Image 1 (cartoon, chains in turn purple, blue):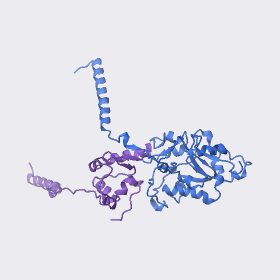
Image 2: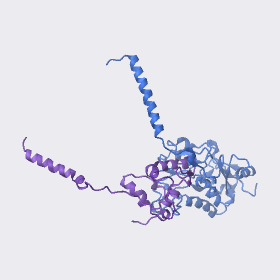
Image 3: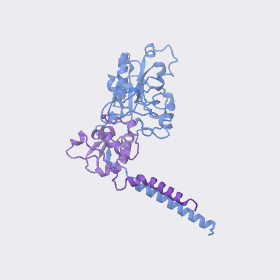
Image 4: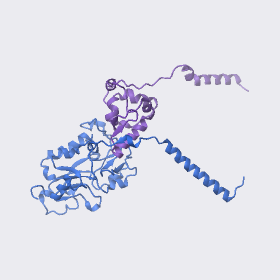
Length: 133
Length: 269
């Protein structure tokens, strides 16, 4: 093989450069995304309970919101009975979800930005007023 | 491997059945959704077989009387006021006799008072709506429960077929972002805005009916707009229609509009 020294050295440099981001982050924990539920409304609740369990909401909130949308707009059903606690809630993103989760930036956007998903809820639904951070 | 015609047909039919069967099994398994018992209507909601309006413009004396009804609607529904008249968004508006009843306007010697009157116009919530027939995504649809012609903004793709189909001009397209340039004068935080590229119109205040309130225009009109069940002979609208002569806009088109206009004014009947 001609110029083997240069080729092997070049390859080695290339691999080190390509692997550098991985090597540098080796052993470090991934940045953990923790949506904040510290709002005055939630802090005032004696038992911090969403319409369903935390685990369900984490995994299924998008499906739940789709179902809520269809129930209200297409079927005219506005009352939701929770599976987890049997309580009744008014089905509304703007008037139920965001009344408690009044911190859209720290709650919704935090995960959505991390996951690079862009839900188009807010092009129509009015987000709660927050101070610019 | 050689195969005769009979073997090929057998194999093909078995694999088709398997394929279709497993596909339906997978989709039905994957469907989470709400259980039927989980969503229910609000017990406070107003119910009817077919909602309709009786509009008596004779009771609207001044410019402010009209404007009160228009503002009541546009303010709670975040309807923007846009500078460019071509971009205008309107749910309820005022127009003259000739534009309201074009099929009757050629008669110039009939009641002068009527011809000089302005009328309040909004979505007719037709029993046989042309807009619903043409919508390719079923974004606009007729509620089976009470006949309201609804607009599902989540599904609207902005094709504007409904605007071409509606003979009453009740629909407006969002050519620009309604949130830009402070076009929404009074913001109602309880109701969404719309976005650029969707069609909107009067929704008979479905969100107010759901909590037991009358439509905003009827409430603000001081009795000039009466709202009720057209199918119920004892309802207020039917009583009014029995007392006074009413006409509808463009009935010859067969869309069965649900707004009845009182003609002749209260005192003269």
